[in-house]
Length: 71
Image (tube, helix red, strand yellow):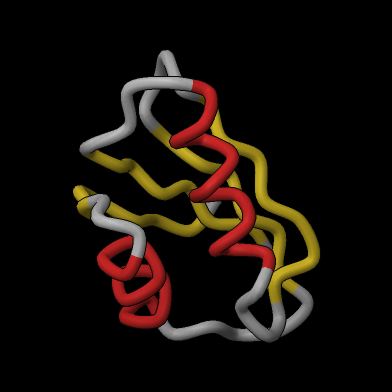
């Protein structure tokens, strides 16, 4: 199971690293890969994770979740 998450607020590689780390700390996340130019993350899951959890993780790091969809 994978999700594509569109993100506002990232401006550099350091931002992308923070987002990847925040997502990887969520239980059920196997891997997270952030594309800074596309302003999105692809997250691979081992089980269902509520979309609200991703929003919370981003807000804790001062980023904004724009959209999220299953892929």
